Amino acid sequence: MTARSEHGVESDAGFLGSAPAGSPLTKAEVAALPEGTPITVIWSGGNGPHDYVIAVNDRGQRHAAAEDASERMRFYNPLTFTGLQRYNNRVWTRDIPPAESGDDRR
Image (cartoon, rainbow, N blue to C red; front, side, top):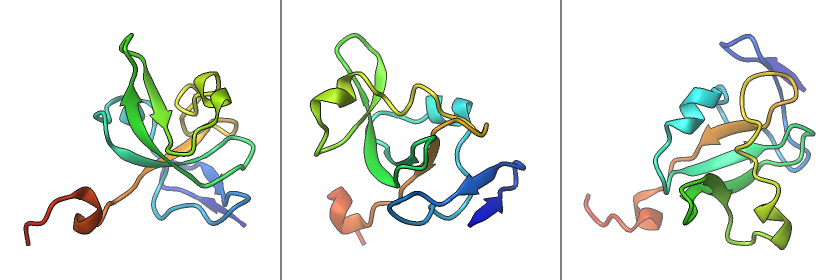
């Protein structure tokens, strides 16, 4: 099923599940996310959704890190081709419940 976002972008559900609610982030919005931000990505070919966290390596390069990342993730960074165009990887931010984030304040 294809839906048109507020940006006029067609956003298909991923092969593994439906797309998150809301519009995907623009390339500029993804670039502005701080390290440690949890994100969901549907790759340009429709693979996903997959959960990652924004990380920065020792050279200052931003990438998407996953707990179950394979060796190839060092070469295929879903943040490389993000955006709203048809063949871009789509990125959404994820909300983390307080219990998962370690924040015990109520």
